[in-house]
Length: 538
Ligand code: HEM
Image (spheres, rainbow, N blue to C red):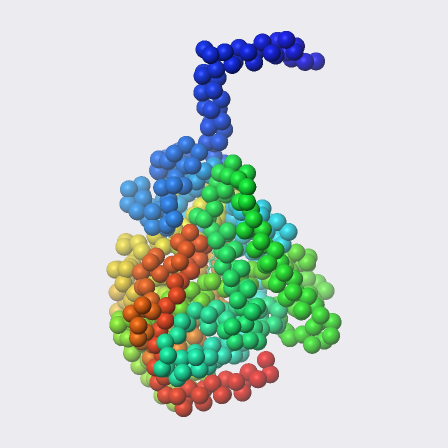
């Protein structure tokens, strides 16, 4: 039954459009639309400071392109934990070391899930499945995390050291060649991108980047994963927070292009491995083990998700840390750090076998401290991968309801002056147990949040630590890393100034060069030959 007859309907329209009523009608309509668009997924949280924002956009514009820095500044005014609105999402930001510990570690069972964001989850990943790091918590995520974590635990990582030996040697050998024995300045970026990617591919598929730094597959995967890192970021895509923006024409073109390019090489890698398994020519690897295990409870999409996680997770993070530490080592203060590291290594290994021994042990505490300080200082994931709570969480007088998104400002925590002495100084000494410049007790447990914290902390941290330790130690005993000859090539050492795209998920270092003065060419060539001999059957 019609609610209004045709004549009554026409009368109502004429009434609404009459000159006296129309302005009120238009205002009411706009008001209602704004009210609907202004709603948030979670209502305002009582007793938790809120940063005032705009209707619909919330605090998006104020956060600008450097969310970590702006949120840290806000924490001076609003306290360590506050709520903001990013479009239609309410986000709880934690900005200091202790507040992160309280929320991410003390409340880890409640903070175990991840939110879904439009650009990454709906556009980029709709058919390939999500990586582990972008999956909400469910039985499938639990199974994938468990399988990957087992493959990356401490003893497993020790068994992968020959791969690290091979890849690290290859990068240093090429650096030696391309720098013409130290005469020409070089940009270390691509050498360490290859190191990280080839290590991940060998572990996961038994396939490595055979070519040199100009390898096509290396270029394609590093470029595509870098672009995807932007779509994955919590600070890059306003369409994640304002659904109306998804209607803009062309908005999904770039994400869709990269989704297709990623699917091409991921399928290629998986098919290459399946073919090798069929022919019996495959090398032991994580995906191969899963594919051949009749009891593995993982389906094809889950196997693909693990592969995707391994390829993408270490790709920007390991090289970002490696090359920014090398950048720092080239600076005048870096000379002092290299001298100390080199002296300790020489004292520990007077027979000159540090190059090989670092594959079995991590004895040089100064290099271990250098790894930790690098992870803190550069904070390559300044806003950690986001979390969603699955239970209510209490913070002081506030009850934060289940289903709220939490963003860890890792940069804010790493530069928290109540936890770190002079956080703007790059100083590995803070992580030495004797004479630390920080309160040594502060570093028991979690030394930094470079790998996140709690229930969804990075599962690749053992592998990454071993990669970083080996590469730093070997670079330091192979070369004196010095400033480039041309001032134009000098690295920018400011933690944000060095970043090409501030809204990306991971630090994207600007190009720079360093000089590499070979310490002892004869000895270095001997180490390289010995590594090549050891790893020739890999
Ligand atoms: C220096 C190198 C690395 C850094 C700085 C890093 C950092 C991180 C961070 C910050 C997270 C989020 C943790 C959280 O939410 O609390 C994460 C998650 C993860 N990382 Fe790493 N990572 C590195 C290397 C790797 C490597 C080499 C792999 C594997 C080969 C890996 C695999 C993963 C996976 C699978 C997750 C998702 C865990 C989950 O959501 O349950 N990472 N990583």
